[in-house]
Length: 125
Image 1 (cartoon, rainbow, N blue to C red):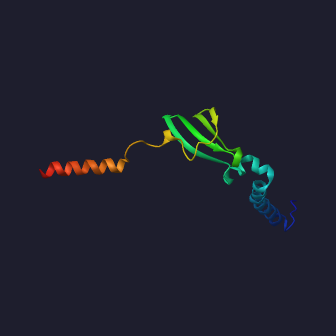
Image 2 (cartoon, rainbow, N blue to C red):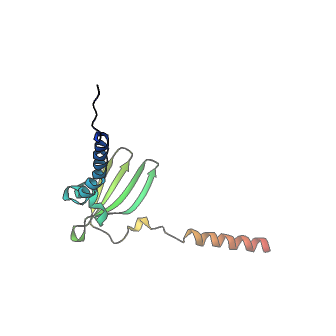
Image 3 (cartoon, rainbow, N blue to C red):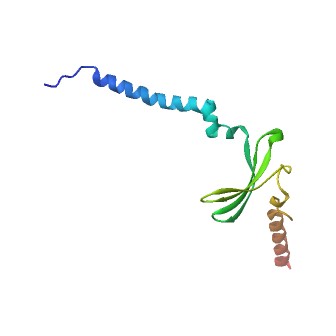
């Protein structure tokens, strides 16, 4: 003869709900603990930023990343592929962005406006 306690199913359901509710709470506490900061919590506080990126092929890039704060700041030049990230060079910060990352000459919008003016002059003559 099966014997069942009247409130056993309800009690199990309440414990299950309590455990599910504790999971987000535990993750929130872990994120704010010193152990959680070592697993990516510090990155959101301005400890790292991308300075520039140059695509060499669909799967290869050269990325300049600034790490650290104050006198401890460094620029790391990284070779990034789909399977690895390698440090190519490390140097002191060079201002806001490297000169090579800035496009020389007039902007694309200015060139397009010049071409439209030239085409308009040819069509009117």
